Amino acid sequence: MSEGTGVSITGSGHTPFGRHDARTLESMIVGAAQEAMHSAGIDGTGIDAVFLGHFNSGLVSDGFASSLVHQADPALRFVPAARLENACASGAAAIFAGIQAIRSGAARHVLVVGAEKMTHRSTPEVTHALAGAGYQNDAEENALSFPQVFGLAARGYADRYGDPLETMARIAAKNHENALRNPLAQMRREMSFEACNTVSDKNPLIADPLRLTDCSLVTDGAAAIVLSADDLVDAGQPAVSIREAANVSDLLPIKARDFVAFEGPRKAIGKALKQAGLGIGDIDFAEVHDCFTIAELLIYEAMGLTEPGRGGDAVADGTVFRGGALPVNLSGGLKAKGHPVGATGVSMHAIAYRQLTGQAGDMQIDGPEFGLIFNMGGAAVANYASVLQAR
Image (cartoon, rainbow, N blue to C red; front, top):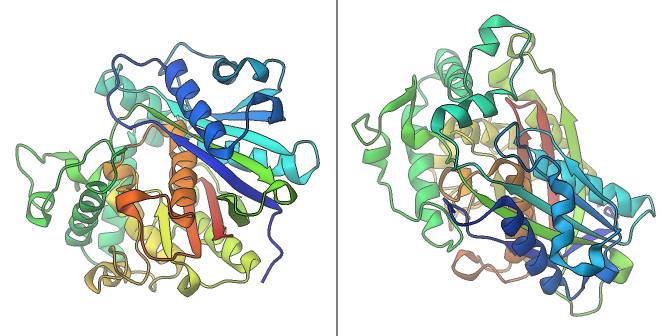
């Protein structure tokens, strides 16, 4: 087994996810940052660097958002801060920047925040903004919304392996059931398999064959973590080791690669597990990027839970459910917890930190040692995988 990155998560903050008309991007950033520092038992005097994950893509006017973090504590003034943008993996990009800052010796404690304000925009405006993470220099791809992009994945999967729609509906129902245990989730409402598997007025087709219940939510929210060098972690302090972290970026044009094979996610997850000296059977839970239910299905296969084309088996036999061998998205995932784009990767790490330190409340499972996180930007383009270990 590897010696690890030498970096631990020592605190977390997390606003509720949802529609927050009365909250600004700044107030969410500040709230999550303050909670994370309080959780870590540190204030601004101990923070050496700040990194913010924030996609924006024209969603808000707070273009210089990295310096909004400084409002969380007067002592943060003059601490270097930078915004990281890598589409829906902007949060993971910010975390990886923090890890590298500590590993290089440039910092000892790093504050990482992810945030997005989305619901004040109309659905067409949000759809257009998110489409900016697709390939712009091809007329056909440039015309696709992200639901349409992942609709292509679902149709491609059906052509290659068989219709995945029933499995996708079961994934949606699973994640909604999990969200009932997460007080921070946007949609804490049970959705039956039958409702998710039926096209109706309440569950219309969004991008054939994706139904509304196959799509993640437009969300406001922020999350934050404190990263610390391992030698600064006090005995008895709630902390989680970042055992390994891997980042793999693929070609942007979908036409240039086999989208259904999910090669980038497969390589990132495989690299993180290999560097950690672990197999998928060693992982106790996973938080993964279910921007659409077909993405979670493809991630099962990329994780090595099943052979390609057999991801539905992990649903049918209960593997990925709470109580299964490898529960996936105990938080409710992007599907039900919500998907404030820049916050998502940080949220995954904050939730996993709480799970591994026994602070996950009703989401808690018994005695987890290893958690796997996979955060993805674009159509499997920017791929970030982390293996976290309880200390």
